Length: 131
Image (cartoon, rainbow, N blue to C red; front, side, top):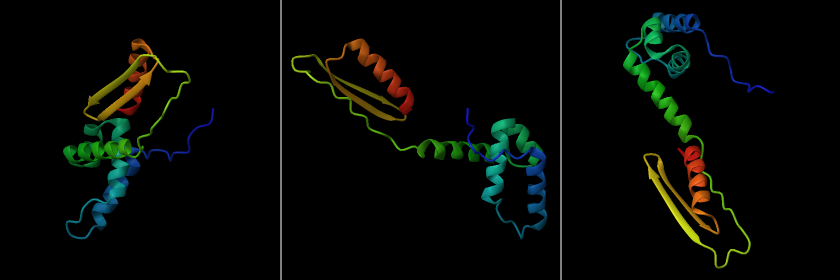
């Protein structure tokens, strides 16, 4: 099985060294660079927010917010799709319109010829993927 070519997550010691170097060379009260936050978030996903914040001398609340923001961005990066399923000879068959609404959005399914059980299974499967 082929593995994805993601860069390996830096170890906490490597990220700590980068943070310390930045702290020693920063000018004034400049903000922590995005690349350091990204590295800290990657470590926090693996090791936990509190442990990472303590090891890197970061504000745990800010690290938690950066982690949440990065997860929100990655969820929004996948554009919604549309799939139309066509069947032949659907005249005179039962027609269903199923609408689901949740915190993440709405899902509407229209179908002819499917059973209520088929619609329930399809809506569950699509809702799990969409949300």
